[in-house]
Amino acid sequence: MNSYISEITTLLKIVEESSKEPIEHAATKIAERIKRGGIIQLFGSGHSQLLAQEGYFRAGSLACVQPISIGPLMLHEGALLSSENEKDAEFSKTFLTTLDIRPEDVVIIISNSGRNPVPIDVAEYAESQGAYTVSIQSLLYTEEEHPSRHSSGKRLEKMVSVVLDTKVPSGDGIMHIDGIQCGPASSVSGNALLHALFCESVERMSANGMEPPVFKSGNLEGNATHNDALVAHYSDRIQF
Image 1 (tube, rainbow, N blue to C red):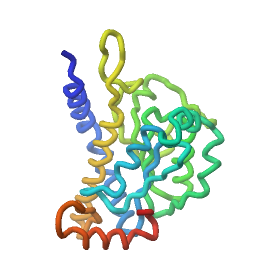
Image 2 (image 1 turned 90 degrees about the vertical axis):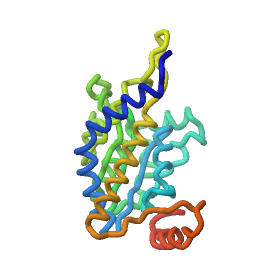
Image 3 (image 1 turned 135 degrees about the vertical axis):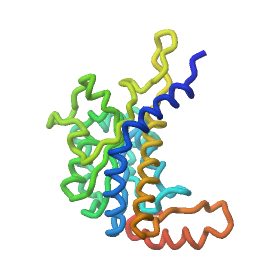
């Protein structure tokens, strides 16, 4: 019997070993930006948008996280439409200049293939605003020469300060059953990288004498005052 759990566990061990240095580097920058009053903004389209939502308003995670949620790039407005818009070289013009990205911010762009125009445009725009940029993507798409669809010919990894590599094979599936590739892994690997980065950032902040802005569970008694204070602190930048 083929085991998805066994395969994903093996993949996560590979990711853990290969991502230590980029996570440490990015976490140091994130801790510095948060200390300066910045927030973390997460962008993705389609299933990558699910990871952007994952880091938002989450017990045990950072409070200073804002997903960039563009309706026509999200699954609930139509999966086919989302996929079409992400590949449209002109679509980012409909929203880019409305984004409130500041020099003290961190922008994490999630795109497993790293080749579609819209995530690349977001990364380029965030860099132009002075934000620190991170991508979560699989560099196997690069190694296997899946070319950029961006007009510049550049892939996502060329537009960001640091890359967190999901190590997911092209096509996303990590299982092969009777010649069928299945068992998508990008969400699991990407999620692990995201929270590993956030935890490392918490460690950096704590080591530097800063109280990390981490939400506590609202389902445990006595945490409401703590969480309400964090919401009040970040409500000028984040739509809670």
